[in-house]
Image (cartoon, rainbow over all chains, first blue to last red; front, side, top):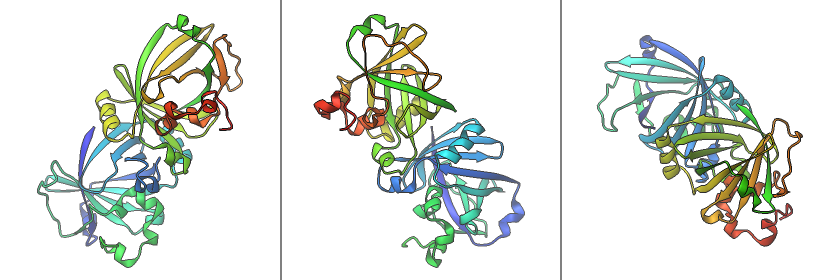
Length: 172
Length: 172
């Protein structure tokens, strides 16, 4: 078990692309729909992810915020493919770009499919209040916004967001 | 991934106890409540099990019947304990007795806690119609009965069942 301490940001500019050192292709689905989490019928998201030639099962405590319990287990890719096809209700597909800045690795997720257009920078930290670099391309923080949870992007994809939602407005 | 081909029976008599070769102690919980499965908000049960000194994560397609996709992964027992405490809504506790009969291993689950009194024999087969021994203690088949799913025993434990339910009546 790990503690995930993650902060999530929108992007202000496209200039981060010059710093990409590695790009992964990710496809993922969830065994529990967002509606079950919203209704309190499950207390964790259960994610199946295929990441290039590897696959992972991830369990993450379902609450908004920066610090969350997280469990990650490698599983056979054939298992993951079958789960994605038979047990998940929709998929998220994205390219994950790794952008090192000073000692920190930003992971910049560029969504595809019905979430195309959405780009989010994530940052894993050792403490919720740990300092981190703020490159010029880093935009508004959305760590607390449930709509950016990938599980929620399946039921309410970026293609269906209004302008205020796209601007990272927390009140809508 | 495996295919689980399992048949489940009530017990007609207590005479199986003479044939027990091994007994395990199992504690398990679920990351998804039965209500979420019933509402179609998840398509698989996700079970966390601590079995003596080992622990397992199990994912099983959520539908009644004998043949179901099943995935089993060993996980660190400390992870499982923390998931049981923080991510599960109630626990099932039972003793599992192994009773070999001819070439077949019956697993007889004797439930504890709020399901005390419930005893169920399970049998894993290589095909849904594979022949198997029928010892005298084997009672009515309940493979198709959702109420015997362990995930359902958390929301509706045996202590709350009426006499017809306890008799394995499928219509109630």
